[in-house]
Amino acid sequence: MTKNTNPSAHVGRFLTVEGVEGVGKTTNIDFISGWLEGQGIPYIHTREPGGTPLAEEIRELLLAPRKEQVAPTAELLMMFAARAQHVEQVIKPALADGKWVLCDRFTDATYAYQGGGRKMDFNKIAQLESMVQGEFRPDAVILLDLPVAVGLARAAKRGALDRFEQEAESFFQGVRDTYLARAKESPSRYWLVDAEKSLDNVQDQIAHILNKIVSGQVG
Ligand code: T5A
Figure (spheres, rainbow, N blue to C red):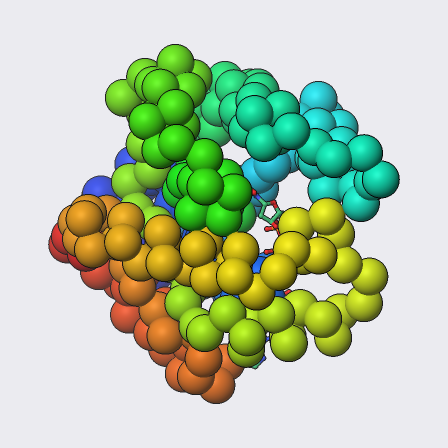
C-alpha cells in the first residue's frame, strides 16, 4: 500500500461505521484501522456507547440484560449522556489535533435503534442531537447492510446476547429500514456496503470507499 500524499488526508475527519447486529462492524473496523495506518493517516479508534471511562460505565448500564424494564426515554437519555461526554472529551479534541476519528456507531444508531427499533419520535431524537452536538455531524458514515436474519445468525454464534441482541427480529427490521432511509436522504454523507458478501469482497468495497473519502469525493 502506498502512503497517501493528498494533503486533505491529513485533516481530521470524523468517520463512523454503522449497521445492524452481526453485520461485521468490529471485523471491518480492524480492517479500516489497518488501512489508515498503511496510508500514514493519524487516527483514533473509539466506540459508542462508550469511548471514555464515564461513557463506558453508561454502556455497561445500557447493555446489561436486566429484569427491570428500561423506559425508552431513559435509554435515549443515557445514549446522549454518554455521547455528550465522548464528543467533548475524545472526539473533538482528536479532530482538533488533526487526527481522523474512526467511531463504531454514533447518532445514526440512535435514530435507527431508539427511533426505528423502539419507535421513539424522531423529532425528540433530533432535539437531543441538536442540544448535545449543535451542528456537529460525522463527515462520512459507512453503512454495512445485510438482511436482519443473516446478521442475527452471525451475532448468535458469538455467545451470550446483550440486552439489545435479545430484541425480536421485527425490532431489527425497523433498525435496518431506518438506516437505509437515512442513507437515501443524505447520499453525500452515507456510503453503503453490501455486507452479505464474503469478507474479502466487503473489504474491497470499503477500501474503494476510503480511497474516495481521502480524495475528497462525496458519497
Ligand atoms: N445502540 C448503540 C443503540 O441502541 N443506540 C445508540 O445510539 C448506539 C450508539 C451496542 C448496542 O448499542 C445499541 C446498538 C447495539 O445493540 P455494539 O457494541 O456496536 O453496540 O454492538 P453490536 O452491533 O452487537 O456490534 P458487534 O461488534 O458485537 O457486532 P458486529 O461488529 O456487527 O459484528 P462482528 O464484526 O463481531 O461480526 C460478527 C460475526 O460475523 C463474522 C465475524 O467473523 C463474526 O464472527 N463476519 C462475517 N462472516 C461472513 N461474511 C462476512 N462478510 C462477515 N463479516 C463478519
